[in-house]
Length: 351
Ligand code: NAD
Ligand code: TYD
Image 1 (cartoon, rainbow, N blue to C red):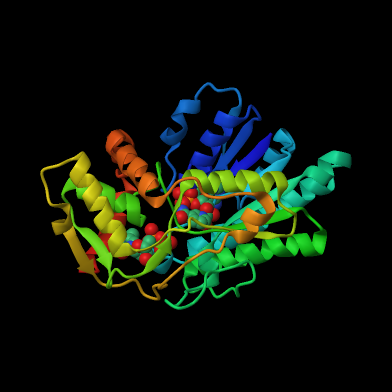
Image 2: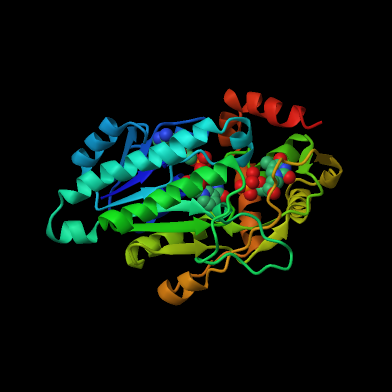
């Protein structure tokens, strides 16, 4: 079986659902259930004998040791993290704790577990650390794209904490020979993303008749990847990636934020006609230290492992808007409780 961390979050839940749709290999999901987790996301797996949930914090060494000993996974796929840049600006310590200390604890527990394995179990073991392109900093309009040899230049507490975790993962390969793989992916979108991130926030606010808050001039560029394509890339790297290597994953879909928001408004106009959604666009104060552009050259992954995204931005966004409109109960669930305080903290002060 494989062990997944952070499987109640956005990408981890999509990964588990896709994995079990394609394989019968069991999954144990280790998640502490922060605000970003919605256990109902995986309700369709209730009663499925291939799926087990363990509520635990990756910073809790004793709990992780016990889970590794109990399930004896052949691989660890590590998604668990604090993942939102704006939250890292308001409260960076949680990011240092989970992303650096948590990843360090998970690596150390996994090393201890892996060292005791023998034969094929030891050689075939993999630790796949899921990371972000934000560790490489910001590109100018005329720059090329990020590659596996780009310099680490993180600019936010989030990306700095992810960079720290990437360095630890690298060190565990170089120092201990542990079979570690690192993937750095561009911005994801798709079903089950917490509506604090750009795309789901714009869909749910558009639908609710609320403002669509665009930071600064809205000309910041992100390279968007549909979450299902990220999951297929991770499966491929897990299957055939070379330990010690970094693989960049991207969507070949660079878009300025304002274009993304306007496209969502157009789709909303088709699916729920009767309103001019663009009138809801509101310019608000920019994010401090806002990275201007991210773009990924994924040719290494394509050349070595034959991976390419299958979804275009147009088809992926259509599916995503439809999913949020069809899953109003899921949205209402994640918007209860802590979410309201976040909206107050992040947006009211921006004016
Ligand atoms: P998310 O915030 O939606 O989910 C994170 C999950 O991790 C949640 O279920 C949360 O409960 C869990 N978690 C947090 N702290 C934990 C802890 N201490 N112990 C156990 N579980 C904990 O995040 P996401 O968007 O699904 O991102 C998953 C991973 O992918 C992250 O490592 C992120 O850095 C990386 N990534 C995300 C994107 C993106 O666009 N979302 C792009 C590239 C890389
Ligand atoms: P986000 O989804 O937070 O991802 P990241 O910061 O990790 O790239 O934001 C994507 C882009 O959208 C980023 O340039 C910030 C911008 N943005 C807004 O303009 N308004 C918003 O309300 C949010 C959440 C993001």
